[in-house]
Image (cartoon, rainbow, N blue to C red; front, side, top):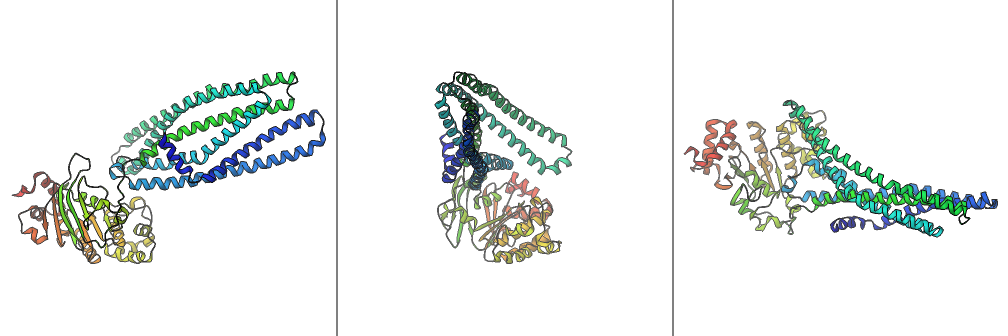
Length: 594
């Protein structure tokens, strides 16, 4: 609970004055409405019953002023609350996304994408509404309840005591149902998140489902999740209905009490008719405001479930952002006794890996499948940190450097790059608006062997490429991603199977163009096809998480090692079968051909 309060306090204190103004305006709105009720006493007693018609202009003016004040505040107070809610929600979304960007990849991979979408579209909205709307309104309702209670007590202490007893019972019921409703709301949100996740996955997998004729299976999965969601919603509805059944008698009990006891006081001459009418309406307003206050507590309980879900994300495992600037210029990069596994303690991927990566040259990393080539790339861009050992940049540990500074120095292109549902130009520039990047765009696309295709399109670089670049072929997506990386012109560029979808001729031309474009900079190429990396200045050969060989192409050919075996397999069986043969090597080891 303390964590929840601290979380809410952070955003309440970000706009304390405006939230206070909202409370004041809403309180004045309620008081103006209550003043309209109070004026009815003078209208009935002084004018209608006593005939003091000279008071008509005064009372009419007071009615008009009260109505105008109420109308203005009725319009402006909610506007102020909505404005506060929107600003708070925007600030919360910024903070939440900053946490998401710092979440460790291990943690991020445990959740589905749609789950995080649900956090932003549902939970953030609920919490922002609670801070900007429900809490100020609850404070206003509490103040008005106390104000009305004082007014009733001044007329009849007996009625106040009776109303207080019924109100206390009402609040006790509220606390009982608050726990149940919070739990029910949490289950509803979790089930709803499951449905949204499945919908997102179902849309993404439409082609596969149709291709394998699994529509009935997909529908069965959806029906199961939706039925679970429906059951949770119905359970929540039952709790709400049960609350109403138990609380409504208390609501009507106040009215019956005022009608009976107030009528008796009128007959005894202790209460005027005008005051009786006002007292009846105040009693109705008392229980109404009490009910609103009770509903606010219910909403706070439901909002508490959303706060808890957000805190589970924002307090999860996060990447160390570092505390030291990146030392420039980059002169050395090395792995020093690095161990790593994606599941700590199981299936070791890198085992005591130690090697130096020279700067300013083209480097290739090859090896058998599962040997740790791509893992090296993911450690270099700090998707993960080593389990043991260190990665050193100019002698300084990589995990101590500012992560934002480091990512400005290193870039990567994956085998399956992500493209935004936007134009080609926006995918290439990714929000970069400086003139230099715009000028580099055509040069980078020419180097990536994609410019000729782009300019042949009717809309050229303004062509919309659809979700994840679905209108492009696999090779075109890869070349577009390479062009994007060339525009950024990082000190270190990693190509992780980035040309796997290209034919050999295009791949060779592309590699030659990249070599010219990045002359003097560090390029790390991870590839299965050995023919495209033979001109690398330095080749590292991986096998089962260890660096077994290094050297130039000619140097490695002169040795009786794994690289020579892979070259022999390539020459004997052709490029197309190389991946499968590397997988067999992974099982049998470098001595397979000995």
